[in-house]
Length: 81
Image (cartoon, rainbow, N blue to C red; front, side, top):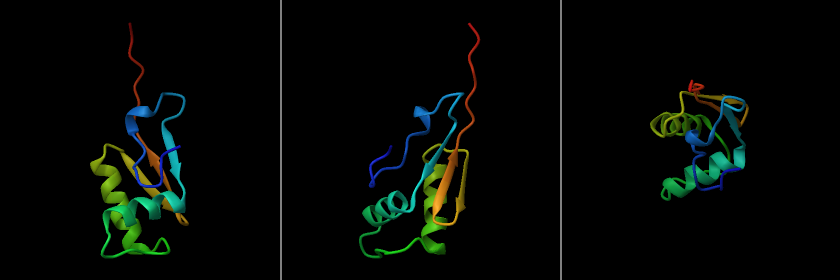
């Protein structure tokens, strides 16, 4: 589980677990840590857009909100030996 002020690392995902659900407290913690002049108390549309943009910059391939939680997904390939 990621700390409230950090984005989960897409490199920590595996073939069996390629996604991560960031709950509303993680989303808000990360947003507020990076937007000290515009702190929010709820996950509103502007927070969602910002969080999705940040997730994509951090290496996640998809980031979709379902309510106030964000489903983060990354494509993981199994390397052949």
